[in-house]
Image (cartoon, rainbow, N blue to C red; front, side):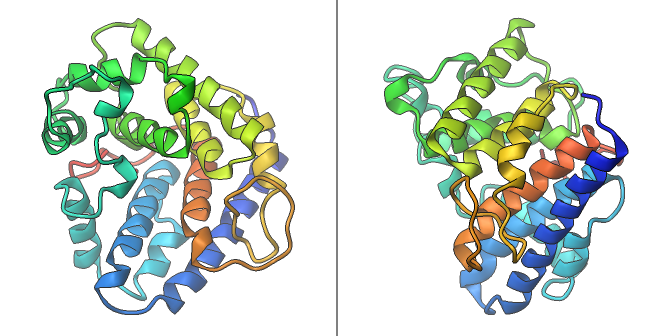
Length: 276
């Protein structure tokens, strides 16, 4: 996708305003175990934005007011090792695909055998067959909701290590099937007015095809930013300041904007074996 410098500057401005809102939330965040998952989400987003930007993102700088570099690395490591809250993955990531898909496999085993290998740093490692089958399979209309889109976006992002590398699918058609799924999910998000699924699909579409034109989708995102810099759960204009309920939509939007601006991973492969 060709984009002029003025448009890129606009996206950078919007992302910067979102990061400033996140800075305020970081500073107001209470100390204690209850903040661990939120700090981990922010750390992962900062890691991804830094990788895409090719330089340390302001979000990473803001985190230093709360956690040290060692603690930052530890949060990423705990995420990699499945030690944080996996609610966003869904209780059964791959069982959700169909009634008979991996029906004899426990959810914890699926996460271990299918998700964890997607995060390994082995250059020649193939994406597990279960994960590839999940990404290729169309999601039935009666199962299509925000939770399913969140699961799909997570698995695809991990497969691509959030842009750090391209997965080696067993079939070349898998890329096209996943892309078609993302287009359908993005259309659902726009029709339903759901901002979080929309920005997740913007990120995923750019992962698969860095040249794909997502400006029409970004128009809905841009028009939804609140005056305080945050993003709401629903697409649309609003003026009210937001609290912690806007954390995930704002984080996801900042990451998607970085992907839309930079389009590829610009730093060396991460030392941590992590896909964010």
